[in-house]
Length: 297
Image (cartoon, rainbow, N blue to C red; front, side, top):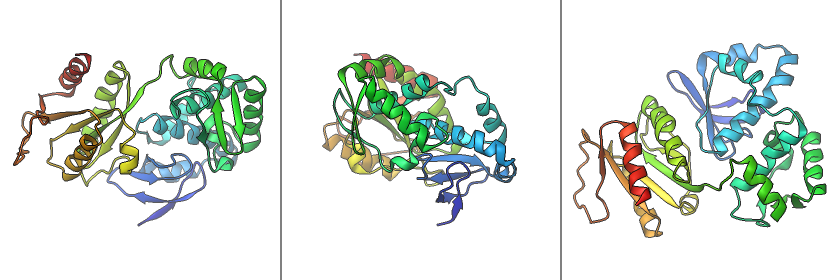
């Protein structure tokens, strides 16, 4: 596999070259995930001055990590990097940066005092949009002194007080993990991410999008990770064996599965047991509404 230098975290990582963008897989910006960078933006970004790189690259690394950890695909270009460098979305104060750390622990635990292991910590200062490890350690110590977290080596726990604080930083409620299994080209993948994922957050689910097209690989996952979900949405459009296998595994783990299929799809299952009755859809706005109706029953 081709490997390349990630501009934002300095790791040498596998990439999947694409026609317009390259996917950087498993670097410190997105452990266990990936982000995309426009192929024609790599050299212009790399040519930025050392001063700009020192100021901006930690911000971009942190943005990638936060968004991919939340299940949101990231596609960067030089204009997007320039926009993020001055975006009001980026935390500046130590209080706001500490809030991002609390929100991370909140996303990865089911309640107060449940341990979350962060390793390697030396490469995780992007969790707080910090420029270096020293600032991350200072923030962690500050949160500990405020009674919001407990640290035991590389293991971190939210205290009951910290859980309430983290809930506020994470949007006020705990979203249940789920995933979308699809087989789509890059444009359709983006439509699923932009239309379906945000609407289903209203139903209390934080969904990761997994693409089985074989053309544009989505987030990678193990069956063990899949078993931690509370909802699976499996789209049969495209007749991808990976979608059927993963959804079948989920059924075996007693995870609710909602099947969907585009009205023009040619997928014909040889056997259609009672639990496989796909929601037929013509556009993704319509599909999001159908799934919301199903979840609210």
